[in-house]
Amino acid sequence: MLNFNQLRTFHYAAKHLSFTEAANRLFVTQPAVTAQIKALEEGCNLKLFRKKGRQVHLTEEGNTLFNYTQKIFRYEKEIENVIDDMKELKRGVLRIGSTKTYARYFMPSLLTSFHKDYPHIKIHLHEGSSLDMTNSLLEFKNDVAVIAKAEENQDISFIPFSQEELVIVVPPDHPLTTKKRISPQDLAKEPLIMKERGSGTQKRVNELFEQHQCTPNTLMETSNNEFIKQLIQRREGVSILVRACVAAEIKEGKLALLRLYGQQIYLDVSFAYLKNQPLSAPARAFEKILKKLRSEDMRPQDIGALMLKILAQQR
Image (cartoon, rainbow, N blue to C red; front, side):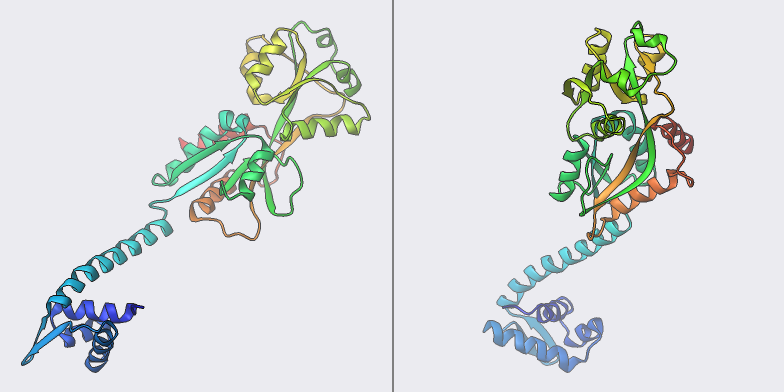
């Protein structure tokens, strides 16, 4: 097996055609260079240098080997440069998972803020339910995720950095819109179009009904917010969605909101990553961006409010 130190010694001796200069470059003694070259020649059973007086020349075999060591140590320098670039975030990839809702209404502003500070980092964004994205961390498909906690997992750290408001969405002419407030029992009587299994929204909605000891009348489950809004407008049912994803339809009068007695529904937005695994440099930079945006007192705020905060920092 080749000895890398012997190859390095040979490379400098061949480059400068001088054992003395090789010793100077490697900060060793000239006899140490001679010993390394001798060991390499004996190990290869080849003569690599010829001496004529004080001059050193490469043999044909030595010249062939030198052509290869030039490539080796050129790549070594390139590797050192790549490592430095990655440490300084001049290159790299951030693989991030997100729910479809967050990807549409939240991630564009957040990733714009990240890209402004770290323009050389490539971003691979993957979408799915909160549970799917949790599993993607466990399978090393993503470095980090911006999700809701769909279930407890001892291998994942969830760091809440904001909250989003969930709202009850109905057609504008729904009979319950005549009430200022409704109860969970009122809502349980309505055909409910639920977000998909594995989503943080469904988990939070189920907790709401369990808290009030009633069972939702689930019409269907889907991950498609646009489909849900279309069904509500067609009076097929009602739903509970992120406020940001229905803000335009509420403003245009296409949908209406209902309020519960004595409470609002919030869902934690969390930065998630594997415990006991070091974050990559791009992932640490992404975490830094989130910490900048995080409210010190963690007062409830929906995604729309956080987006405004991000945009304000970009101006």
